[in-house]
Image: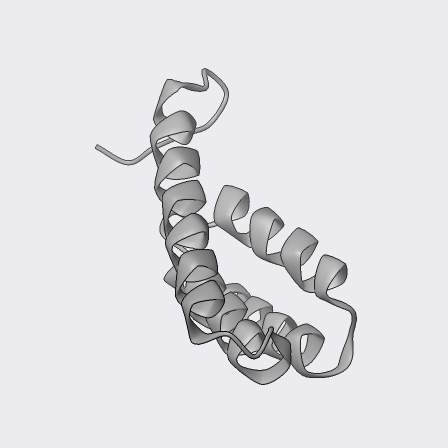
Length: 87
């Protein structure tokens, strides 16, 4: 649990102070490492709110894309042989 909290703070730090691609890579790593990492979607949405384009529809389209990618990765993790999922 402590590792998940530290990962969330690291992702928040990267959203606020690092380039977007660093935050995106950390979010993907968190989604693959933790069972359900909704913090990644929320913090990437925060990143778009802070630094995104001025068009509000582009921000919500990117939120939809992040959510779809998150759900796809969660479904993919169940199909991977070496990934241990709790029953």
